[in-house]
Amino acid sequence: MAFGLNRVELIGRLGNDVSINNLTSGGRVANLSVATDESYLNKQTGERVDKTEWHRIVTFQEGLIDMLEKHATKGRLVYIDGKLQTRRWKKDGEDSDRYSTEILLVPGGRVQFLERPNGAAAANSDQSAQDGGAPNNGAASVAEAAGMDDDIPF
Image 1 (tube, helix red, strand yellow):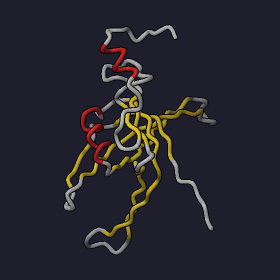
Image 2 (cartoon, one colour):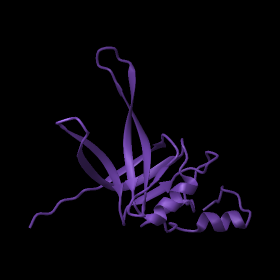
Image 3 (cartoon, one colour):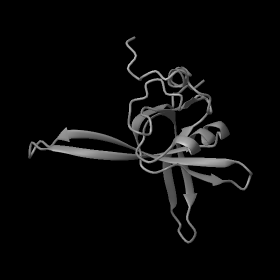
């Protein structure tokens, strides 16, 4: 029996607001674009070079789509846990196949917002989702409701 592991984890910024489309089957699909940055030193010039890689994120999970519709806006820092999927199709009038590799959020996958919309860190944000949209934990919402500050000493 063969066994493999298909798992992707990213931390990056949303390149656009979430795009949600209705399917002919009656369901919906959400698409996100996430940018990750890295830098390295150019051996010839000694200068630092910044590189941005763009990743396509897709989900068909209704609860997760509802959460993304409310909170997934351009520029937000997110953690993504999903799996790779490559789709193949033919464009009308072309003989060759086209391919697209994307990160699929399936049950067990996760999206967590690492900042609040105003840019403040959100370590235990209630705007996170795991397994299709259930909040990760309600600590932040309880603290906010009680009027507590984000600087908790423990």
